[in-house]
Length: 313
Picture 1 (cartoon, rainbow, N blue to C red):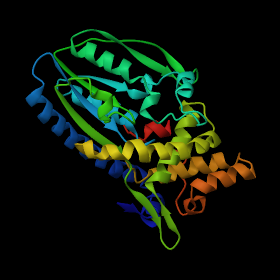
Picture 2 (picture 1 turned 120 degrees about the horizontal axis):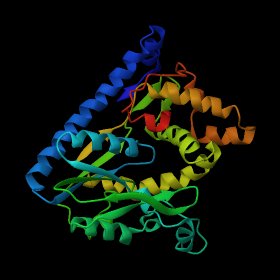
Picture 3 (picture 1 turned 135 degrees about the vertical axis):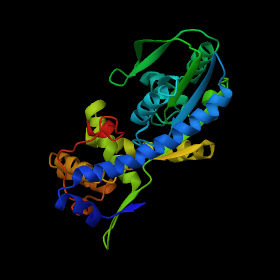
């Protein structure tokens, strides 16, 4: 779907921003319901007693995988599943190990599967599937290593693990596991914004704006640090994530019609603190001249369970 500034700005002109948000969020609610039915139907036929099914969630950077998975978890619990979200990011090797394992003369690639402790993940999943309690890890991005999460996961009669991350649908990640049923979900903001006679803001650029804001708030990274990493992130997406589409059972569109107005406002505010060289770098990746076509939005009543809160709060 393509969105146009005149349509979005009309909601602001008529003081109906809340309606704009409701329309966008309703599209997500419908998708969640369709996915819930798919999972319940497929897993109920297979899961039986004392067995475990998994939903494998992947997609390119800043598609909303984390918040999506948490919302799906709550939704599936209403169908009687005991749900747990497991982030593949928590299975990263230490920053030193990732660097040491790189081929000589190359920069650390944090997007490749080899940057993760796959044997440890498989070991934990195998133990859980055999009825054993496991202690989930947590990766501290500030320290660059795993730390104790303090979270134990105990098997129940009707378990549904929601495994999310860039390699969640990679067959090599789960090849030594025996889930009763798996459902693959590919999530991405597929929509774009067209400014007539001037250009288009693509879903890739929306994801970059999302990531700039998220990394600043949650990963203690500046916008410039995020921009400097973006080429390697994009290369990783092309190499490791897009090929996983063929394993997906469901495609979830995480676009929000209203988000461009919020992203624009915050990116432009951050750009004011950049020096000329840094602003040129920002303009290299984002069509800043197109953002002025959209009405600014400084505050919005975003629903608590919205995926967009991953980038808004």
